[in-house]
Image 1 (spheres, rainbow, N blue to C red):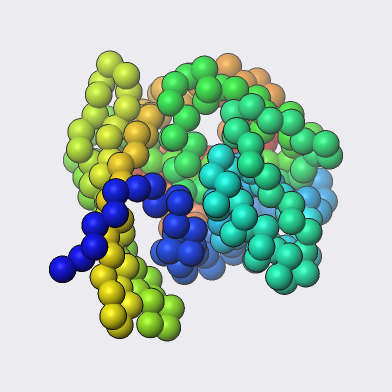
Image 2: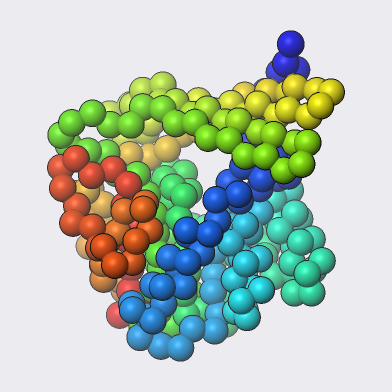
Length: 260
């Protein structure tokens, strides 16, 4: 029988990092490939808003980039900074609102790949975030933003499950849609994390509110942020050789936003 814990998955950075950090390579290689193609300046400094545990920041730091990030969750930031310091890098992430921040020194590249953008609850905060990101980037820099769009034709993805293991620790997650509030453009998601050790089974039960975006709605938002242009689009296969043309059935999109 599992021990049930009602709480935020973000308050358990060790488990979160194992689950989401185990599949870092495709995203990391995609970011590396994006830089020479889409960034019209040398890349030295990289920023991640809502960085969480910094699963990609540590890899980019090891590759020689100066990295930094922010997140609202202090436990995730502590985890991220502890790991950076442990591997010989500065503790360069801070507790900060991704829709209300300023940087002291601008960056060349920024990224947010796994839907965290959709946590921003309304048009005002989404626009504020994009203005903050534009202000944080040097001209010619890029913001690589991955989100799930709501398709206008066909069936949308309603559930998702994935697993990860490290030694005697195994985690299985299950996420499902509880429905969409069309008036508020909010999708309510349920998520469980089942954590297994040789002697214990815990289940963290959480929920998330995600703002919905159809392609036209995202394009409308981008018109309010003239500091960026959409330079290219890809899907979640992260194949730099295959830019993706968004259609009525498209769900997973990576937007390359270029600072003009």
